[in-house]
Length: 187
Ligand code: GRF
Image (tube, rainbow, N blue to C red; front, side):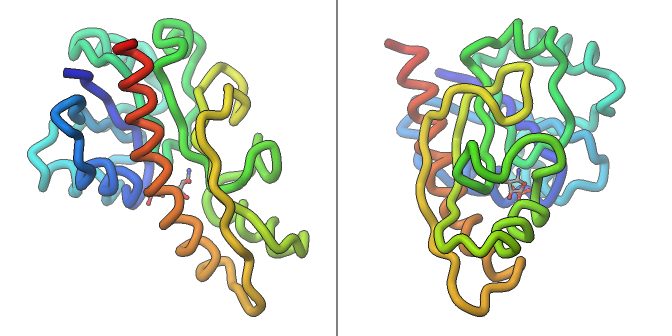
């Protein structure tokens, strides 16, 4: 069984997609960690009887110790806003994936997260945005891309309407991305 830890900071709709996913008996969410003690995603995990923990972004050593103690095989960043320290990205090289709400390399990197991404997309006037699942290294949003899917920008879109449309695609490709991570580990 491939055990994953999911790291969150907010509402956890991507986490919920993983909770609800058909895991085909191949993987399971062993642990959910948030750097925000008020993250609604922690309630989602608790409702699914998944171990949850708040770990401040100022305690990366605590996070690494917990991951090792729990024995997770992979890590999924699902709206996790803190930067993982090199001690963690090195220890889990090739086994950490992230979901980003744009078509990387567009609209990514420092300062591009959550609604800010969609505001920049609308400001740019482009007609197609999307979502990306990628491996995590020690540079923001720059690891090898695993999956991408385009999402149309519609006339009259607001940040909220675009974010909702992109989120649906995020949920879809994140589940597929975990399956690729699991298959890659077993091959
Ligand atoms: C998503 O848009 C994700 O791409 C970004 O932060 C948001 C998290 O949403 N990194 P949720 O907490 O999964 O609902």
